[in-house]
Every structure is written in structure tokens, then in C-alpha cells.
Length: 190
Image 1 (cartoon, rainbow, N blue to C red):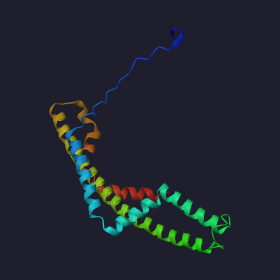
Image 2 (cartoon, rainbow, N blue to C red):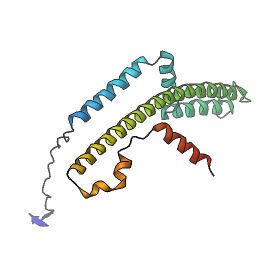
Image 3 (cartoon, rainbow, N blue to C red):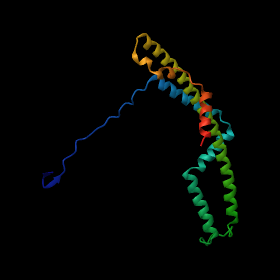
Image 4 (cartoon, rainbow, N blue to C red):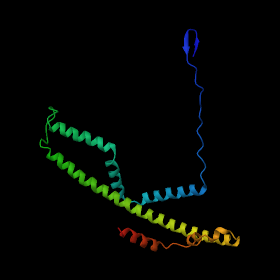
């Protein structure tokens, strides 16, 4: 601390001015894949039927805090008025039967909208899982071919590792049906 003219001042910390960093460059293939995914999602959204978009909008609102606050206010006011806590306002549902009916009907409709949205999302998930499987199978096939090529090069160069039995096994294509059958058999056993 230093004093100037009878007052004490703290030393100033050196100013640290940070300049925003440029985002790291991503490979062109990654950028192209991202653009393709974004375009596909936009196309899927545009092709979504109006009734499904309405169901998604209602489900989105029903799952928001605005929905919670709206219900807290409306139901809170309904209860306060009909319990007689606000004497200047006339009671209109003293037994709360109407409140129970409104809440029940609302729950029926909201649950239906949620199911519609979930069904649509489940269909999309199955499509994406199928795409993922196809890409994985293609990658497995390509890797098997590359391993076979690498093994042939290693044999030509007389690399000792080429005698490893895993090379032959890895170079073989895997039949997905056989894998699924084997998986099902394993899962059926206790």
C-alpha cells in the first residue's frame, strides 16, 4: 500500500485485457457433415405434419416453467377464491369438483400430446439408429479390407507380425445377422 496526501491507496492489479480467441479450425469434412446434419434436421422439421408440430409445441409448453407458474397462479387463485380466503370475490366451486374435472381433462389432453410427440421422436430415433448401424457396418467392411491390404503388404515385406492369428480374424467381414443371432442366444441364457 502506498500513501498519497494522507490517504491510503491499494496498488492496482495489472490490467488483463483478453482478446477473444478465434475458434479452432475444423476439418472440411467435419464442417460438411455438420452442414448436412443441420440441413437434414431442417428438412425433417419442415416436413413434419402440422398436427405433430402442434403436439410438439403444446408438449414443449407443458414441460416449461411458464406452464408451472401459470398453473400455480390459476389453481392458487381458484382455491383461494373457493376456500373463502378472498371474501370480496364470490365462490363459484365450493366443493372443488369443477377444479378436479378441469385438471383431469387437462391431464388427459396433455398426456395424449406428450405421447404423440414421443411416438414421433421414437420414429426419428429408429431412423437414426438404422443410419448409425449402416455407417458402422460400412466402416467395419472398409477396415476389414484395409487390414487385408496391410497384411498383404506386411507379407510382401516379410514382417514377422503378419503371422499373428488376429490378422486373419480381423481381415474377415463380420455378418451382422450372425452377430445378432449370437447376441440373442447369449441373452437368452441365464
